[in-house]
Length: 93
Image (cartoon, rainbow, N blue to C red; front, side, top):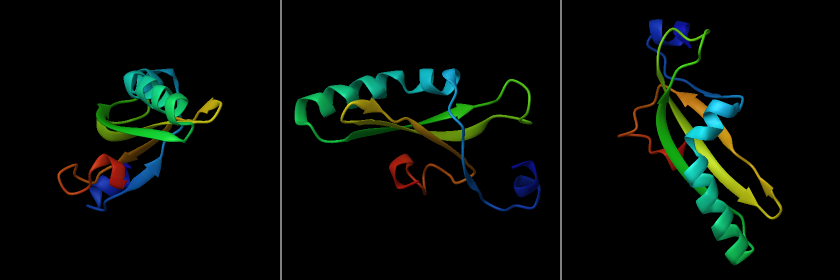
């Protein structure tokens, strides 16, 4: 990511989930679960937030969390990106 930023290259990378990331989308996960239980269909919510790792990243970056609940299971996913939120809304990513 640092190289991409230095070279002025936009990026979007999948981000391994962890407890801190899951905490960021806890409310959206609850909403998706409630909707899925009510409709029986997969439900998704999206949230943009700023995030920094404890050790490896050089600074804060934009992360998009997808709070998804499928029948019988939660399926949270995350990406880190340099794309501006004004041009690329969370759900589009």
